[in-house]
Image (cartoon, rainbow, N blue to C red; front, side):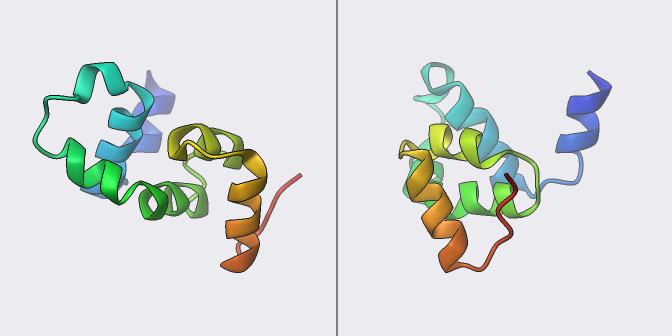
Length: 83
């Protein structure tokens, strides 16, 4: 529990919502912010990856694209890709 608290406390509001809503979509479809989060999914996921809150693999799952698409986007943004 402390690991999650440590990870989530410094997150911006939308980044935290994105993490929760995209991880558990069945629980969040009625929430008002869900549509906005899904619309901005790519940017929010890339921010989470950049801030090292999630891995690129987890990012591909949350974004709903292949891992290679996430890696290509990271390269485009000149983000460090860890192997």
